[in-house]
Length: 336
Ligand SMILES: C[S@@+](CC[C@H](N)C(=O)[O-])C[C@H]1O[C@@H](n2cnc3c(N)ncnc32)[C@H](O)[C@@H]1O
Image 1 (cartoon, rainbow, N blue to C red):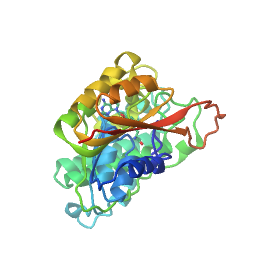
Image 2: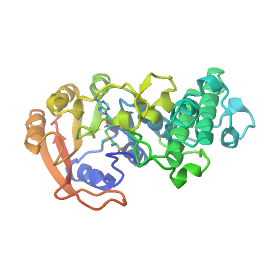
Image 3: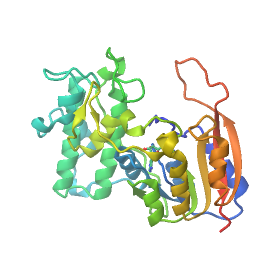
Image 4: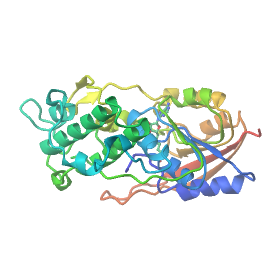
């Protein structure tokens, strides 16, 4: 999934920094801010045990669905049903009065929001409610439940009337919104390990788990993630939250890494709790904290090296204007 701050274009560099600086076999990698899960999947493919985490529930669902399974789910309790064909054929929610997405994010007599065409909003509700109903009726294993939710979350952006994120909808229907929502099976990566996923503040995860290497990819500016993905968060949770404003925003917990006033303390807290031999931290040279501030934290805990790479972006219609923007990788050896 396209994800703000996603590291799909940095995977090679992250791996190179690890290879060049560690002379022993490492097995357990903690991806403490896993976002789209692209880094976790990359290291799972390379035979590592990955422990993933994100405070955003939609991210947890995605990552859990994609990295916890080691073989394709078989949906035994659903018998011969072709699960994907069946889900894609649904048009009406089981419970129309609780069809939160159709009622709040597609045009109807009480709603002007244009996030989805009404037919697709109904399909999202229909599929989401069917997955929940199967799970409640013990027709899905927990791993199958999260896998199907991840497939649904991954399919929604292809029909959403947005320019990348859900903080606003477009005022005219984009042509992609006329496509029918189609959920497809996500690939499953085989591993000899059981990878794990958590939905916690990263500091809390560090109280519970230790790692050979922690990959730490915090937000580096004031842009909070949940407002940008609020509809995916609501589809994942399906908790009928109180929403407000033009975009129908849900309330959310703020991240300590998204404010200049709290970011340094957030890093200090995290590093004081972290139990790992090594860490790699992704950041930007134009982030809320300067390179000196970052070093002043990390050097209290171990020896630090910095690697910088020109910022690369996905193909975009926007003009290039990155100036001196650089992606940074801090490598920290805790000397354990
Ligand atoms: C830069 S993104 C990570 C991108 C990810 N590495 C990828 O490639 O897709 C930062 C992530 O940190 C999460 N986050 C922010 N503060 C957090 C915290 N205190 N604990 C755990 N996750 C947090 C956000 O929800 C977001 O998904």
